[in-house]
Length: 171
Image 1 (tube, rainbow, N blue to C red):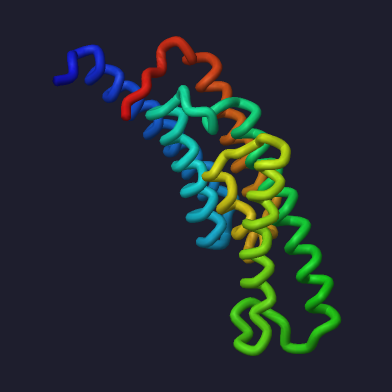
Image 2: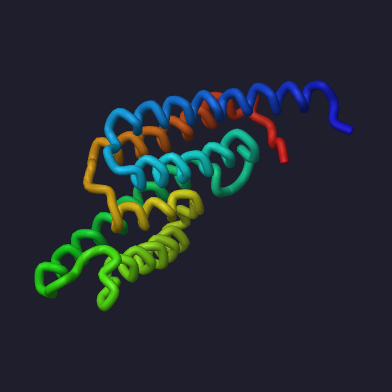
């Protein structure tokens, strides 16, 4: 049986996660013209918010891991997107969902693998950020949306830092 203090934390931390995601969704709605950017950016940040507000003491919910994970995913995804766009200039009929070539899908999958590898090598593991690499390859061309996603990741780390002594593990 959980005590009243636990349920108070559940309520307050759930409100915090809800308010955070409301801000993220409003921000992405203003700049993201493609649905995939909006949905994927929001879902990666929602997963990160779960870690911060429900398991703030998790090793993957630390400041360096969150920011580092998002930066690694962004750089790998953007690098892979640039590489695949260069290759597609050399190959005819190269685009997303082209049945014979499927290069973008392969590049998106490879970007996740490279992101995982770099996160582990540099000790920047933050699983929710890995999905961002896929979106970077497949659809993000809007740097405003990318900046909102990175700013939101930074905001999450600030929330965790400022409320470190108040946030409780809920699960």
